[in-house]
Image: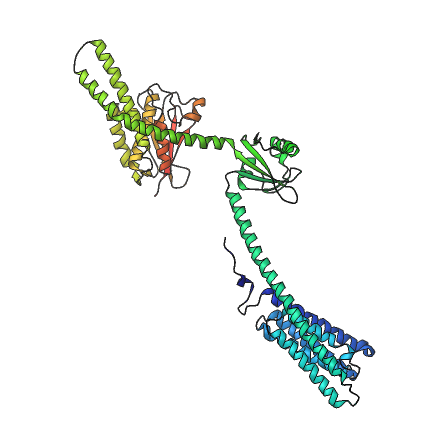
Length: 531
């Protein structure tokens, strides 16, 4: 799992957004304090702390402090550089101002030192490293200088005030260090929370992506059967809208009933339900979650898709086994045919000839089946090229008619459009041979009984190849099984011709369909007209 580096929270100087926000709040506190000073100097001069100053002087001092603090607030908001310089300047100015207030307000006994401690505490929270100790030392030095100056200028100075100044200086260091330790803990917790947030976001994204890519439908239901979350597969299976009401019973009453029954008994059995809109049969599985709202996960699986997968696996295993068997019996079958050809040379009567004909015909049929099975195993060996059907098809049709000893008028060839197909040439010949052979078996074998029609498809850059016969067509009950292996409706068919034709089309990125509406059967190959 990838983590965003913690430096993403910081600028080039190593200060994070929280540092600048803390400095902004610190300057905002100073502005509020300055406004209170100015308000007190203007409207309540008797309660103003700097009683020793003249009215105009204390008002001017309050106004200057307000302007300086407001300027510091504006700079920290607009100019996010030199963080330590901005903070140190603000602290030094406050130390100077509050030391002056302590001096003119009657010393530390006036209580104004508390405001200086508040400044040091704030600076300790937002400051960095040894600068916090520098601020404490600066405040201590200012207070001691103020006490020394007072001792030289006042005759009634009590030396005990130096002890009070020493205790206050110790307090300055204690407050600054304590605030700094607290700030470090807060920063460490912030960084930990940031890392945990990144981990949680990454894990959430991965989990969400995994759920979206799942072949199973996933629903999250509350206790009332309201759909709170779902993945694309669940929306497809239940035909859920993207928004609006999400009550489960509106989309699948059987699933809602099963959920209510499961909520009462909490069994772990899978449940079969049917979706009214699509007619799909689904297998549902309910799972408790550890969420605070007791949500329930529902896993939905299309039974038809599961059966198709099982059938494909079964057919694949059967195909491998059949190919091995076909390869093993090919040589013995060749020996039987050869022996039959030798026996045909001997004339032993009509019964002998009839039995030999049966042996040779069935041997030829078996050999054709074996060749079909072995060719099917080579479907992945494709070398596609752009085939010009205007040149290829006439030659192919002549070759087929000659091989089957048919009149030329039996096959009607119609070409239009681009008449180009991107296909493996050997696969194309094999596929088309099978389609024409299937059409021939069910046709009337008269003029125009088989029509090969080439035209542009409705899909861009695709071409359609139709093979149409004038036979009785395909019965409705057989349409679902017509492309299955070993399924045939003709007594001389092997049941592999159409299956192999479809497999070869899929291997070349084409599609073979049985089109309705024709007089007989219309098999259409939709393939690419460009590479």
